[in-house]
Amino acid sequence: MNEFTLNARRLLCPLPVIRTQDKVKTLQSGDVLTVECTDPGVMQDIPAWCRINGHRVLETRAESGEYVIVLQVG
Image (cartoon, rainbow, N blue to C red; front, side, top):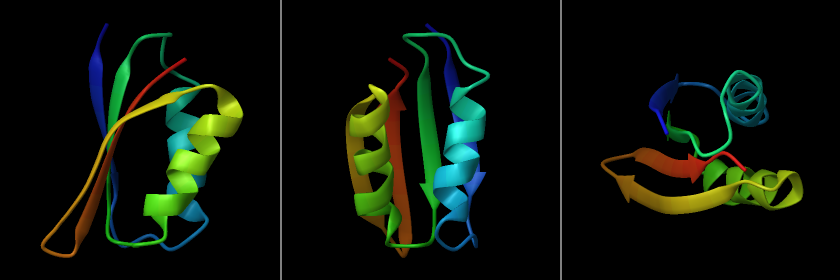
């Protein structure tokens, strides 16, 4: 298992989801990706995308206007 970070700050929907999808395509099953965003919509959009595509959300948190989603590639 490897850990990766994706900077999706200052991107508006649907770009954070698209960038997450593109990054996940380059990862192996079991890898962990931390997505850092400033668009609050990602708190619903990325978990929904994960459910549809078989990935697991490990953590979501909002801090100081930033939204962080940690997911494990399925």
